[in-house]
Image (cartoon, rainbow, N blue to C red; front, side):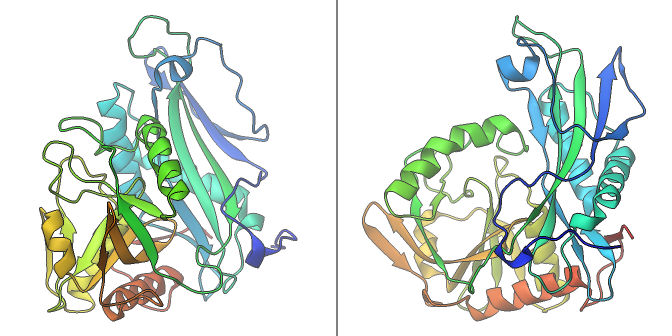
Length: 341
């Protein structure tokens, strides 16, 4: 199939309208059959539940072209399962996991001309999401919902090479104990906007959020999980009930243990320990791993031995191995790669 005439290398991370999107509606206690449609616009009542009380959840994933020419996605079953957890927490109906994966496959197939070619560094970003659509004026769950999937081609995350970032310890809290930090809800991202804009104004790339109860333990950033490397090469990631369970992080921990033979540990990580780690990275769908060179806590700097010029050696191995699995250079664990066509 002929690809769209797009300058793949110079794409940013922004919205580019593609040909088709998937839509299914929930009404009278059940989901309809769903279908691919042409219209990218959503028509809803001014009093729709999502507009009044932010009743919306979403996922983020990618499709890409492997070296042998297949279009694939990475572990979509885990995205489907995570959306189930998110929906339950916000009193929304569950969209069945098998239908979620099928909707992703249908949408990517219908927009295959927008999947960037192998070697371009670009990918097709996939956004499944669900929201309350009927009028709701009292504070209660909506009765009707819409599940949708759209796609948009996005450029390589690291243009011109990887450079470690500088992050700051945030004065804001990301999630409360027993709150919604563990689910992928739009409301969590809305409240993080002021914090990230403030960080950028102060010259930092991202925030490090500490636990809101004691402000002594590392949690995550606004959109990625932390991964640390000790000086004896153990991989450590923070454990907390208010952290979003990143699919990329879980995959990297598996790769560390089963492909690289490293010891891995998920545990509470106290901020006082951060200065003792050899490497630090932020892991998520967009970048896989963004290396962190420096953490600043109100003027006090923690500089990792891996430096500000390139990824540390262990994080580089993790990045190379996981992206190698995704691109088909390295054999994937069973079920990790979903071939679309």
